[in-house]
Image 1: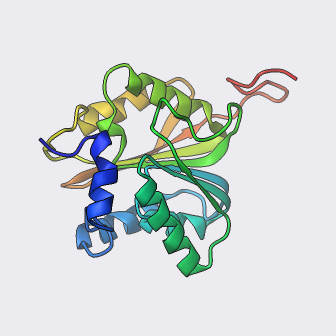
Image 2 (image 1 turned 90 degrees about the vertical axis):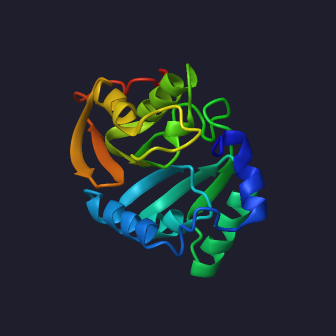
Length: 207
């Protein structure tokens, strides 16, 4: 049985890079493809869910004004903070949160880009629709949502990647703008439509 959500803290205590995201050519190439696939050169606010040791975080931070990076493992967050300090990046807030039960940002907050990589297929049962709905609600009008997940067999993964991404296709108000099918991973990016002038964004309460 492979790692489940509860094991991530143990894995990061045993190794600062348990999945070789720094040294593996597969991981380096996948990051480069994701970064090159982002439709905008720069974003005002980014939310990264499942930041791990910060290898993707440091690249996303260089393309935004402000960012929130989240992981369920406190050791991973400490490693992420170290990577950001090494790069001199000061525009990132980090959060430890067990998704989706612990949500790292306030209700009503919105982001221009949400990135979820190698995380959502670990979320099972009724937690998955909650997770997807919260991501959807935090997309600003015109905001983009990137999902990148391994497609081959993976022990401990309750969600197959194609079915996982298909669930986002079914969410109202989203249009897929990027689709990249690699032999080992699937990358999709959706964009939220812009509301009519004067309309209140979904999920926000009136003053």
